[in-house]
Image (cartoon, rainbow, N blue to C red; front, top):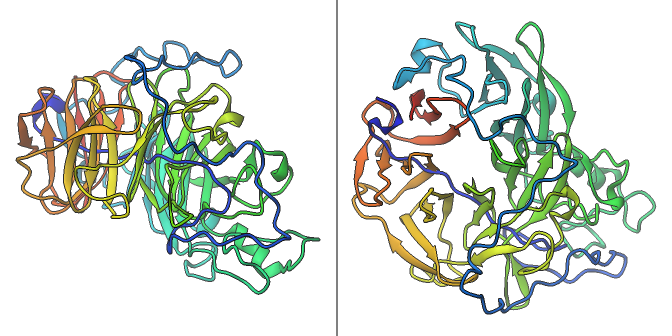
Length: 475
């Protein structure tokens, strides 16, 4: 038996719209004071009314490959079973002593990365147990509000031997003479202080490297971006179009593109939007925002997924979206809503569940090979959606789950959807969209994360729960 042996999984995506100065909690946008620069022309105010779609407007063609980006050989053809056991279900916490990490990931070399607070572990193919390294990067100082991070959040594999580690910190606050709470004056600007400028260094994302002895070392705290405003400023992740705006501070989710022309790209969702990375270079950000009393609403994004055709699926607490990435990283933040180089295939909300001003608590967003979208909510269960237009969907709630508390989703190549719950373990929805069964091979009631690796045969599904890590091998 493979992955088909019995479960459901989940993965949620976050959709974003880029705008300088939009806020999170509280969701209020304050007017800018005169010394703050205007947003660049790359980030226009979004179009409020979507164009009338043609019959096939819901499925624009996939973006062409980037001739300069390089395409890995046989990117869509899994070469073999890879270096890991092919048991249909194997508890890695018992077999390899990986313990109960908070987050897991695989890199392109199929090294298994583990995150547990201030330590990072790596289980290399052939190892009998992971090797742990403590105090790397943002974790080199004790966690706390006044430190480099409050805590770590997620880990994702990158190219072979590289991983990315996300961190959380507090939200920015107003300061004397500064009305926009996310604005940080630079040296030479009015109201500049070294203390506020130091806020750039908190939270964000580390790139780490596997060493020859199995330990982990910091490669770089991510700071390189595509915008001219940011050139040479080693101040972490912030708005690409204008470095003064420090909106992306806490990383909530991450996903590596595993196939297709953009294989190797990484997406992270934050307290504000979704950021795209290629190697050590990022472009931040996009979010599916909307206006309430002239204030742009852009709450935290937990939902993140990669569609079968490479679309980026994102969902914050209220809205969701499907972005069509372009070959050029520098075009990621160019918000023109329904047009431009990185348009929204879909941007809207679940009108069948709540009003737009109410939180839906989206935690996962996936698309199955059938084309159906699924969203998982921490309070309202799993919802299926097909596109009715570019701003509205046909919604239906999945029945049969014993709980409405969903933390993770993951679609697999055999058409199934795995659903990770809080309190009821892992479930599997078959390709028919109806048949639903619990996956008994996975221990634990709280499913923290689902990671899918389709480049080996049988494919790998990492299932992280409150009791540890189980690996399912599928078709």
